[in-house]
Length: 171
Image (tube, rainbow, N blue to C red; front, side):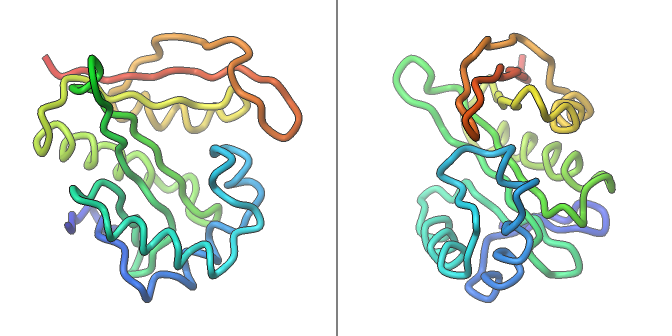
């Protein structure tokens, strides 16, 4: 998959992305806003393992966010099952040097449109840690609405914090 989003691209991960992926992911300011399965420190072996996992998916649902051809982040959807089968969770991260440029918002809009087209979904949702209002603004700019504050639902770095749940539905 490859989508052009202005001067940036969303594309499948490639083995040669490992070094730039590790360089951009190995940042506490990135990892502290993600689930614990996103390691910190983030090493080259972690990047290689992720690329192997992401490129082995069928259907492919996780993509690199690329700037000037270099992978500087990731975005993907997790398809749900059973009674939630027409719902998917969306998640994304971006290397800190690329924050505040509109890249995450553009990527989120593009993957949202792609997911609604590619899969029989009626709902996409994302959760944001309460201490990360910038990510909430990204979701809102991409057309997601705040639906709930999930009180004391996250344990991260020894703290118990709230999650903010944002969603977008297709009518």
